[in-house]
Image (cartoon, rainbow, N blue to C red; front, side, top):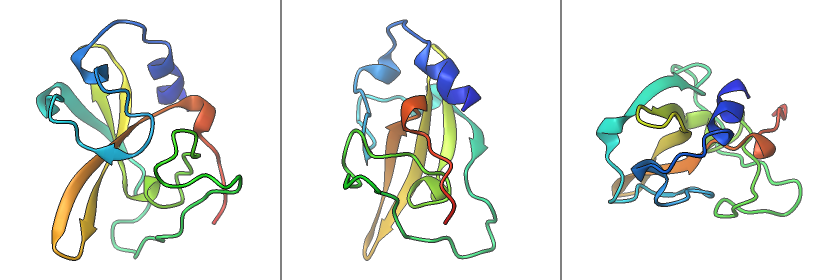
Length: 119
């Protein structure tokens, strides 16, 4: 929550925020990954199989901008926390691994959407 609150307080323009990333989406081509540093992970135990259950008590969906960020649920539970080294905004990133592809997906870490929901 502390990182999400500090991120929400950033008002400076930055290339990392040229695409809002309000919902989970493919890594924007305009984003320079070199300016993002990994500062943490939401993966509880890398040796345990994570849940792929999503958390949407109010009928939101994966792609909804107002979908909750529940760290114990998919896809947040597979995410790393990134910090922009230029402006200080924080993002979640995970690798979507489907049948024959992998794709990095990101979402802005927003305090108003963080929920501490038990699985």
